[in-house]
Length: 167
Image 1 (spheres, rainbow, N blue to C red):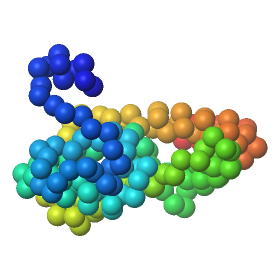
Image 2 (cartoon, rainbow, N blue to C red; image 1 turned 90 degrees about the vertical axis):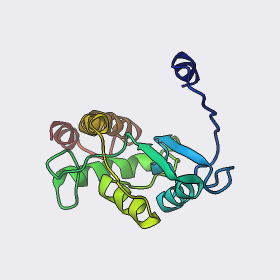
Image 3 (tube, rainbow, N blue to C red; image 1 turned 180 degrees about the vertical axis):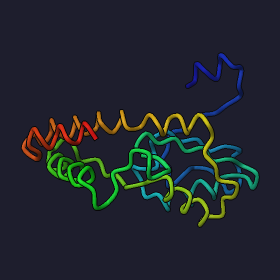
């Protein structure tokens, strides 16, 4: 990212820190940008902290590859469907693997909107680029399912695994 800002001749400072405990005073930042962060920390604390450090006219940009979409017709394994049951089954088995000990929080677009609105953010929207990313997220999810299946190969039968991939 640093090379890109130099290439575009942007004046930016990058700081890596805990997204729920930012080292900035209240109302000091113009933009808070995060990529694949919100699903790895408490989302309400995350949004609250972003709101705290942003100037009143500041912008928050959240990119999250684990976000599965906004409309039911997009790929979202919801409750009471076979795909959701298989997804949960394979990830439950993978979660006992020592390589899978990172805490994740379930977040969906509608939850993001609720967290942001509850904190006081206004004019919440998804732009075209984000919409394209959301539509591509099924590929990412299928990759995560493959990873989970490899970490917990006995969780699903080959037929169940193939059903999950085919849906």
